[in-house]
Length: 348
Image 1 (spheres, rainbow, N blue to C red):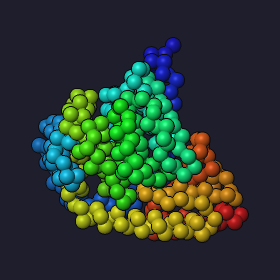
Image 2: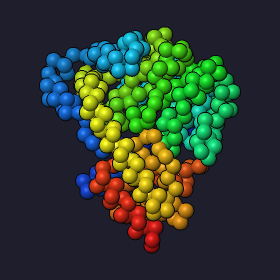
Image 3: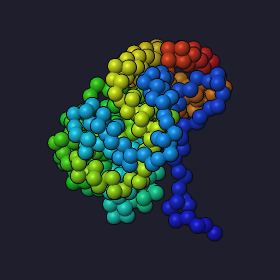
């Protein structure tokens, strides 16, 4: 006997990256920023008062909305605060999709999308990328209620141009959600599209570029009408007072943010070059990770051998990814340890 709905009973659920508890590991498997958040974040956390904890938070996180709106050159009614980017994804599925209203997205991509589709009991129309991760033309013809494009894409790190996504928004009849969780490490973004298209939602995360993965905070940028509808669906207090305070301090410290981003980009380039030098095919990435493939060793075997050395990367045993490893860009010291280990493994 089961008490769950049939689709829930049959679902596997989302599988997060392994979280090792040892202190001496090189953790390059879940795309955390290797550098600490802004010192201003730690300062405001130290100043949290009992009164802030006793009372319910602002249900809209207006102090953050104002700061994020200024950064994105919009008004605060274009912004909605979320409990991480995943919260926005859940809200979007609940708002737009059901048994008669499918979702569409190119694959391979973020593995949470099909999980949320199953939970919402909506059909998922999966359109394959080509070998170079170009945006599939067929994505515009699905007639889906919600179309999602992760950009930069996870786990490939590839980037679809703003013009291409503008054309997609113009062609489809439903909503286009551009998942920009990793866009801080790219050279362009789609935030400006919300002024030209009333069917575009931009997802932003504070986990990657702002080093706040443990805080769980993200936000949406969209037309005020879309935001008003999404607010109907969100939990009543979906972001807490501590998170709003810390995220606001982080997003206001743009000088520190940009310095960290440049450090990650520099290491991304160095890591890519070192991987290529030892025989890995590593396409250009616009995120804080790279996707690497060895023609001499199986990805699953490399993954296991790295684990034995207390080095963790991400291996996906899925179509189009079974021969590849996704590697988070770490510090120089972490990346050097990884390369040293990979040199040993590929020469065994």
